[in-house]
Picture 1 (cartoon, each protein chain N blue to C red):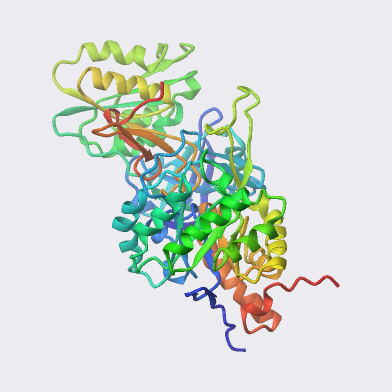
Picture 2: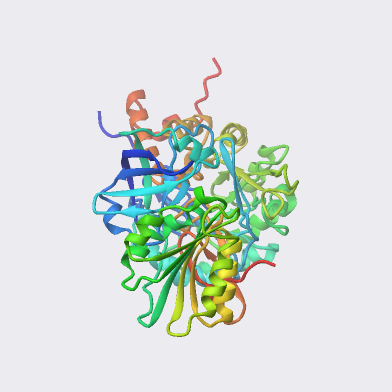
Length: 306
Length: 259
């Protein structure tokens, strides 16, 4: 049998395979370049960029939980100039398309950061972070208010012709409404989901385990939540969905495709086994061959309700 | 830095609760600089998913050794590893200790098994000075003969007085420092944070250098997750620096301690 087609189209961006890395779990690329063949990824999604430099939260910023981890880095970022000067040139040496995760403390900052970045030919798409649980302003608040959510996407749409991919918050009552609003506002695809707002407490000191008080839960513990959100959103929109949340094995990724995702992102697993994304790509291919499918698209949204 | 499947060559009891894990890794062993670490995926850790960082105690062209004490879930599970088990490693990681200046007297300062991170440095330093090792009891003072065999003058301190001077390493270090008038000391330190800070303060007050091995909760170990940060002084204030990538070794003047 011929090799199945793994390529996926997200607006004008072609991914050679449907596997990227989740923003915030892969740095800006150089951190993993010695361990992972970056040219094999479907896309590289870098850690969030705001217009200006941000320092982030105090420590502890991470805490291990059963089947996952909490994090609250508060997005310490190099700013748009740091991204353009350092990381865009580095990633230009690779053939893999680059998705830049963008965020702002105000609605205007989302537009501002895109204005600063948009001339860079080495940037192929933007993931709009509307759902970071770890900063007081913007972030999650923007992702759970439907009108602000739409407003930010419309603003970014005005500033760029490149594909824009809003990253949705998991803690909303109706993910379908956000998916539809994103489509209406001009999004090219959806990223579902961000880490889930979460907290842990040290019972000896009774202090929160993270200096920020709370953070985002990621890892295998959240996968079933993400599968349902992808599934529910896919019922309400025709936009391609990049599914993510606890993908550690190829089988996890396959589940996302069946639920309705057109592509997937490997997140927390990068910290544990940097070769996960490559294993997932290989495993998806093997699964398609075993299933007698010649294109990944044939798998998307194929839940069997009997 | 590589990711390597290492085979357990030997896993032995050392002293008290301490153990030494010998791992075959031709990919990592030859490239280790003193003060670097590996990020180890502990098998059979079940739903606890993150890797664990360990200082590299010894290294040669074919293997590395880790000296540790089972204190938490990760190390307790690690203690069950047997000969021929496979362990996934990423390493060597971090910056390692720098070369000592030509005109200084190298001094090692360690708390508990912190001296595991200092052994390779102790071996590579041309001039051998004094080594201050502190611990709770005699059982926590490790490898004294080994460091002495390399030519170091080891001065133990214990909280309970069961070996050496009763008290903290500073109780041995401070009187020693007063007697020094020939060479300026240069410290290589690994231990708990209060010890790092105490030695760092002395370095600044007395105008010598102290290279401190810092530690914060980390997830990735390679500089991507930005969780293991410490405050590093800059000309205008401070910035976050990653223990795993920019460190773990920082000079005392670089570190802005939390109040």
